[in-house]
Image (cartoon, rainbow, N blue to C red; front, side, top):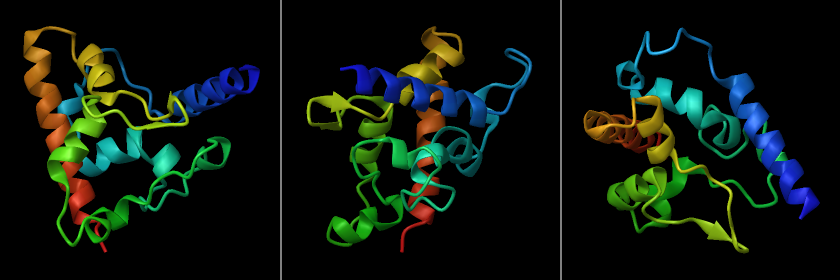
Length: 138
């Protein structure tokens, strides 16, 4: 249990350190392209190239997925809807009883203002991110 708490702290701190600072609400997330969102929120674990070799990956007790091979692993069909659900938290990715990946849909929603209008912006953010991940398939 103590190791899990330490890991959670390390991952949280790494996410904060790797997140560019900006004035509160001066720039909403949906102004970011898919690649910018990926670099800001995903690269710490999945790596800048998406292969699972981010600086935090070695601290996570599971193998971080190679996002460049999703289409290859799914019979040459890109699993866009499943990926949307994983990113926004509707499809849990639980390994050994613990979800290691943050529920980004909720995180984006809170950062966007946590209101009804934020839901539409979150859908746009997630769609841009899924489109970017589709673009890095090998």
